[in-house]
Image 1 (cartoon, rainbow, N blue to C red):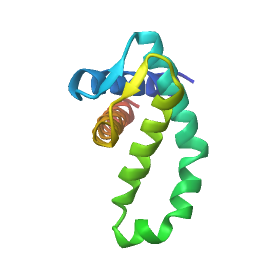
Image 2: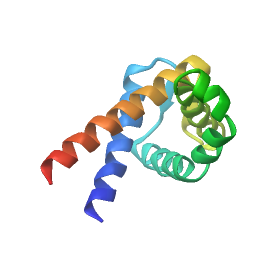
Image 3: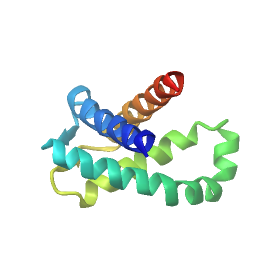
Image 4: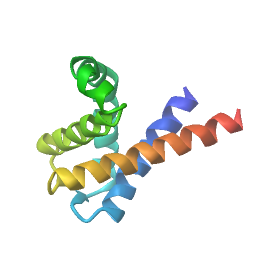
Length: 115
């Protein structure tokens, strides 16, 4: 259970870091970051595998790089209905999702090393 909470806070940190680094990403408060991390986690758990399966030919042709586009659209989608979280355009969504993904990846590697 502690690992799940730690990963959740890593995602919150990633969202807040994207707010700090990427000019088009705006998170108004820490609470909004918590909500965005929960919704992104749920979408990545339930919707992302379906989207990857549906776009499998494009994903294979691009050698997996199309998954970054899927992540960007999910990031942008969350911004469309969460008050206090906004993304200026696809470029901001792409780089914001990239920051969140890298933060989560590096944090999981660090947590895995602590076990």
